[in-house]
Image 1 (cartoon, rainbow, N blue to C red):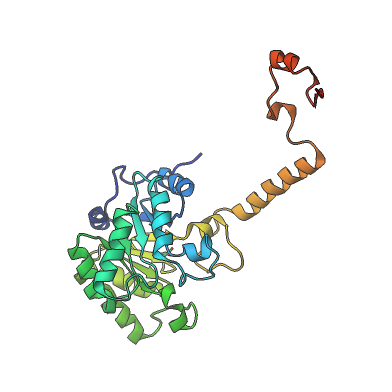
Image 2: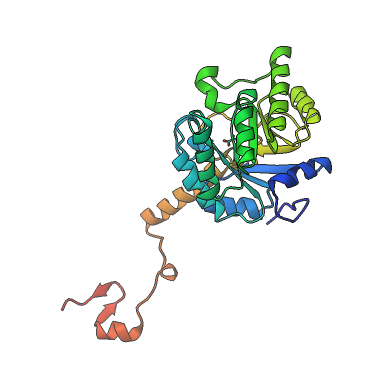
Length: 294
Ligand code: KIV
């Protein structure tokens, strides 16, 4: 099995990411939503694990991220926590968990930190969330920003489209990134923006940018693990390079097992347990299929 060697073996922390950017290291981030996958991802040397609200698409079948609840993210973060040792563990603040006032948002973020044992939270939005980001950081909660395509705004945006395609919207993205940096965010996700804009933002801020569909200039790349592994239904975005087709692999394994059961070749004798001779004698069992009626 080929394991990716992290550039640095030590535990990744929110403050350590800035130093990684200064050293020009290219870090990697993946989503995970359960213990098994989190452990595999962590042991593979991925630097940041995000319990993303993409769980609404990947694990919960909602079709988008809007219905995801805080309780769902807390529960999955707890499971992921048990599988992670080295990576920085970040939990997403779902839609509705930071929209009804700062105190409520702090309480919700604290649940992700205290109950979920996340080390940081992520939230969508630029300038309009800067005051909240500063408040969370003041309460000792590291915050990852997220601008560009923000899937929680799907109803307002009317769909998922590349953001920052005009000079004006690109300038706004740059202002968003600077506002998040000034507010104390330790990193900023740039989702589905032109690579030139991602590069401009990456060069303009000291904190690392984390790109998804934003080109190669970002300091860190992130993908939804289901996309990377080919565990998806339907069309995937152009930035998804399929490194595996687990949907096909899983379907094949399930079909072969069902076929073996139906055809009588599974389980074989070696795949079951025999009764010790003494007990068989006492029970007067004459064959391993038949127990004599009393
Ligand atoms: O929810 C998520 O998985 C995300 C990443 C795609 C950045 O926000």
